[in-house]
Image (cartoon, rainbow over all chains, first blue to last red; front, top):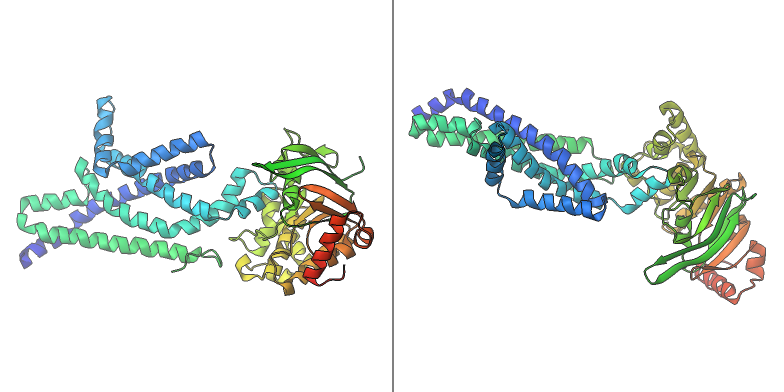
Length: 225
Length: 250
């Protein structure tokens, strides 16, 4: 590992960053998908009649139980068998997004169930329908309680975006591999650089979530540190 | 029917236990009725059956001649006309006192923001908490929280307010401020149905007292009669016990 190889990686940094941008796009896509679907799954598990709730539990079991690489392969190669072409990027967003939704659903479910039943009763006693009570009373509280657990999920899926490498998405790992394929001596500096980039992203992301947490903090409704 | 609220033959069973068995009574407009009785006799369940926070198994309830228990009754609309004050306040934790009072006005009554704010401020002033509009529930004492919850009920212009042991979760020194608000409301002509162990309040404010035990109404009548000459030995025994417990001359 010579100074020379470090300099080469330094000059290749724009390429790595271009790859990292793809990871960020994946991240945004999968978090958004995971948030919407995860919240829906949580609400169904808590409030829906039993057969519907059971379907949500089965969904969550599948996506928490199948390895991520297997999910990626299923979503990438699966549709092809039925003549549906799907880009590696889309397949990665769907596979990682649905998987994250299963994990996020349990963060949200825990938070929703932590809200005392009296909150719902009080909202209903004012004449609010169930959905309105969930929207205006339960969720604003549950989402605040979710933030701590959610920052965990964020840190986890941020790094999982590199798994998209496995189905050929040209993200940061793929770019690093291109570098090292040409010159194997760049391997260590290149992957150290990738590691460093993710450390920075993890820090920035959790710092932002912490900021949101402090902004939204309400006396009596904080997760204490 | 000249009655504001009519409850007829309400029954509720949890598993093998019959919590309410055939409770009937009525409430006139402007009347304050106090329900007393030992714990676990279905008083709270009865209140919740009136606005169907708990669904009664049998029996019917009418509010101003409209059947609350009808299968296709618009229960949300009916609930918006019946205030409910809970034992443990149940203020919305994430909202300030003002927003707690305002939420129903904005989201249920669809009132404009400015009008709702003014109304909410007026109701907070009415319970003596004009200065606490921006405080969150966790920043208020129990007595203050309960007064906010009364303001929240009042803001909806309810036809009657149901109070479910409103002072039972309070430290003794905070009970007075909540009872004070309730006394004022009674004198202003609010129709109130109150489950409480506060015999002083029952005595001085109630138009009628209902004594319940094991899911049935044992006896009801004006306070003078019930306190001086209870017709039923169980009533006498309960009143004696409670006066020993709370050190009040009953």
